[in-house]
Length: 283
Image 1 (spheres, rainbow, N blue to C red):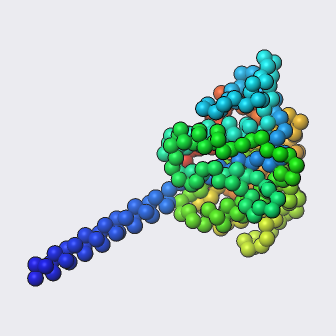
Image 2 (image 1 turned 90 degrees about the vertical axis):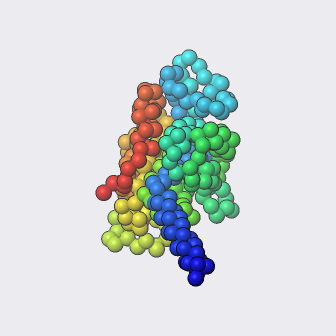
Image 3 (image 1 turned 45 degrees about the vertical axis):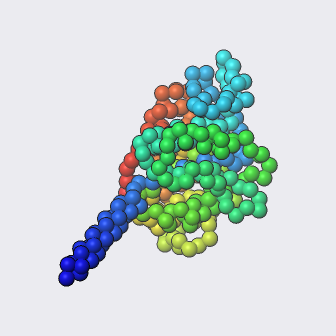
């Protein structure tokens, strides 16, 4: 009889432990998640002029040739190098705040299915690990030839590969010049306004994908778009700016312009704090 009581007590303890583990697992799965998308397409090799007061260095990384060529008057860095600076600071802050996040390099390579390369898996990271991995693995000096911009396709792939496995609120942060080599801006914008939107349709472009994600994960996904452009591209009517603005709108998020940072260093930390702030998606 005592043996039966012990067995029943032991079984009850196991059931309790299992329930507690399930609750803990559910809580972990429902944590807020950031996925940083760093555009390394060929167009991101164009140079941006920076004021001397602007710090574009990468703490912990060796200086690039661009940074070694700095002059007193001004200096230039590629748009890709500035994206590296942005994701480095964003990733470090998220790591210090113990957030769950991942980093993907957006790149099109002919013959390869995936339009992205994983730099940091979606999990918690040590801040020093973030710096080391980005320094070593996020190569911003890429060929221009045949390195097209796949913003629309990468959003569909990230959904299939990652978003489907996550249960909490998700913030997608897209660092880009807004180019897309495969989809026409006007056709994509028009498709995004269809009523209803068929979520199973082929990819129409990143604007339509933004709406598709927002409707597929209602109240859980927001898309923040961060424009990195040269002075020559600085035009309110430029397609890249308009595309990222529309993506943020359909993706229930917000659009950010990095140009003020090129002139006022103090605006950089404000941008990073905003991009990494915890919150629910826009209504």
